[in-house]
Image 1 (cartoon, one colour):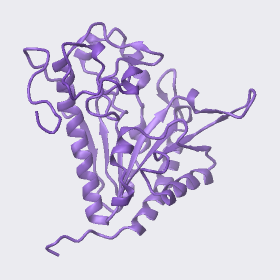
Image 2 (tube, rainbow, N blue to C red; image 1 turned 90 degrees about the vertical axis):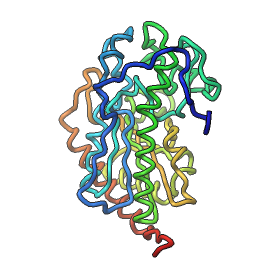
Image 3 (tube, rainbow, N blue to C red; image 1 turned 60 degrees about the horizontal axis):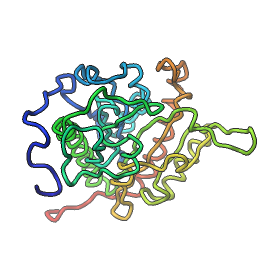
Length: 313
């Protein structure tokens, strides 16, 4: 082993079959010209469910979609017009969760012994929501039987690692060109957790939650500008509650080094029928508002940066 990663096979004698539906595992939508330091990531909007995965599940495809950030990549498609790239997974969160550490794995899910470097004791693993989820929705078990350890490791090698390697490259490119980079991590939230209690029976609907890991992953002024832009359009916004940002925001956000990360959670009831998983008529309006809000963030960020000069220059 080196760098805390596997070098061989674990728990089985054969390598799991490649999933042809997931070739490529993600897409990068590039702008015609890179004109702002934003980089958009949509890690949970993938909707291609490999046939072999469906065969191994005890749930049908519709039930599995309950954990999917349906249509979020389309909500943030304005990234291209802003002059920023958008990376989006093609596989679903129920198959592999990119917003986790690479090896947050639940031993109860696997037939065989996990490698020693696996994080088997995180809160997310305990809740069934590790890198390879055990449950979806209301704690519904996904799999009919245990997976081989090789199966889990190969998903990480073939899907997780290439996605994150590409995301790092996109951020580095923006930083080199602008002297600053801002990762916008794009998510959606069920409408129920988006209700904030006002006391008694009164509830306040939250349209957006901005997560900056309680001020540690992104410059305060950038986050406040983003929040104000949303409020000017009439949206109700919360910060860090109930979602402060996951692994991606925490891992990539390093404001002192010029790389910022902010998570945006969109209330699904704003743009989709949650029961049918279908877009509503106002989907286009919400997408247009998001583009306007993020254009303001792009402008504010661009003003702060300056191209990084290499030693040769």
